[in-house]
Image (cartoon, rainbow, N blue to C red; front, top):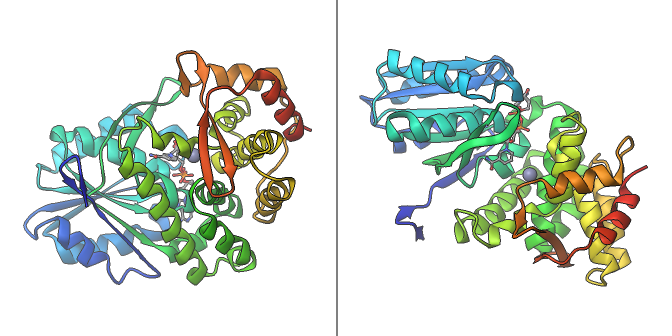
Length: 356
Ligand code: NAD
Ligand code: ZN
């Protein structure tokens, strides 16, 4: 399958690093160079292993490591990376490996999209969120003067490679946060996938790599299908914003003290509640959804925030179309629809369920 005349990249998922060398060799010839970009925490666990494997593939491997955290996702760090690449004489046939979570992936992808007008990047996601969401789809970018993801580009990876055993070193909070997007994928597109998760909650709580393999590949496939039908976000891709309209507002207002997936969980509860009130899903389906979120340690309610501030903040967000908020609702679990007629009163009522 092709779109925009570009071949679609492969996603490789495994439980150790056996196939990494062959994935790299497919993208770069032996006489060229590889730069592994990572953050300080991920590098302490996995940089040596990845550098060793890359060294089997090409003549020269360098690394660029920046301090872990969202605060590094900015143009200054991108400039430092450009400088490193220039010093090391990287040209258009050399490639970047983005080893880390969404911060590393977004920043490295953006640098790859602009350095010499574009070089290849292989995404090597190491957080659950990056595996099921940010590494797939080609959105790259950095934060700018306090505005999140304000500067960026669409730049598809040449390949995506994930070693699931890297998930073992994630903190509980980071791990469970990834399930916000995973449950979202099931709810908006695939009831069978959603039921699979529901049946394997205890294995997911114990980080069973066999079950994670099914879940991660299922989620990637859903994200990829939606994105490939709509690579530059003109229509269907909006469905991925389920739980994000209010979730993003909550994330902003909490000053990012809750993780993204936790805010998406809260946003999904609110959007699910509106769907239930409109008789699009049943009470049981709504309850099943909130139970699943709770079992995966995701919040379904939050204190400290006011309804008005959330509504106001969500209206100033990007997801507006001719002044109307674009809301994603469920017309059954497994199928999402876009609605522009959600009223302030409906949002108020839904938020009162989520706010303590
Ligand atoms: P992150 O990259 O900051 O990673 C979270 C923390 O976990 C970091 O401290 C990191 O060092 C550490 N870490 C990563 N992998 C680890 C591992 N295997 N073991 C131990 N520690 C590890 O955050 P994230 O949640 O992965 O990604 C969030 C970012 O992704 C945000 O900037 C967001 O804007 C972006 N994002 C992008 C897209 C997209 O489509 N491009 C989609 C969703 C989110
Ligand atoms: Zn998200």
